[in-house]
Length: 284
Image 1 (cartoon, rainbow, N blue to C red):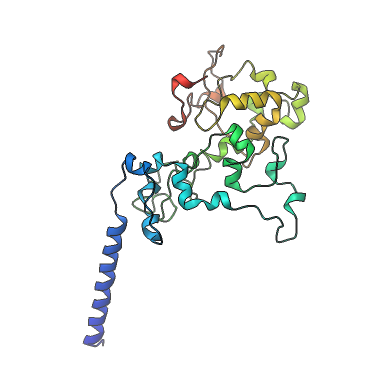
Image 2: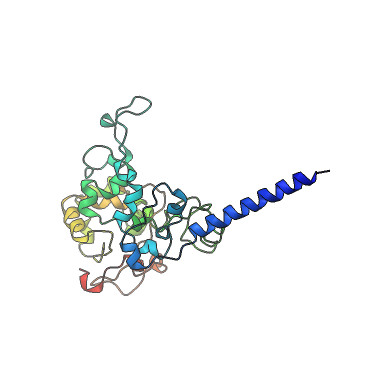
């Protein structure tokens, strides 16, 4: 049988734990920041990791207006980290080829994941990616749909288990396989490109001409680079495929587009995602 002193001690510990929990809850339950507050940058929390983790900039709607400078203020390691010169097995990076270096359009040394998408010469020339293009927040709770009050519900496809981005709507855009069957090619592009003069514009000068009109790409630069080297096109349309499936690109209408919709295109969207659409006046 427990002594009265033991019972009192347990009650005291419970009371202390409750008080601490309530205090921490007050620290992290801050009202959503306004657009003006977000524009001023994240609060400098110093060593207060808990408050920084739950800062409203990690959640919607604040994340939708976050700038790269705000993200990199705390996550600058994504650009500062570099690839090892020599692997643990003794293989030198300079004398080996990574999977993303196989095409003629990639120049320079091996680079880390985020640097390849943000600061390499090709990224600056052809892309307009930002942190929020892929990252739409970071819930510190368990990364599983429906697992907490703030997590994505089970019914949504905007969240992928254990991922901080949704690969199906971000990575797959540029790292899916080429849809050879839909395009009517006799064989994969590396095998059939000579038949088309090693130029994607042999066909695409007349069909699917309304392309790349999204905020995260530089459409004119892509068109110019693709006219010079087909690897520019192929690189994002099968040449660097990380997935065995293809991305169902929106089928934007183009001049001279046949009125009949092919069977494979009946479920395709006709516009890009709203958050990536360019103002009508700026579309080419």
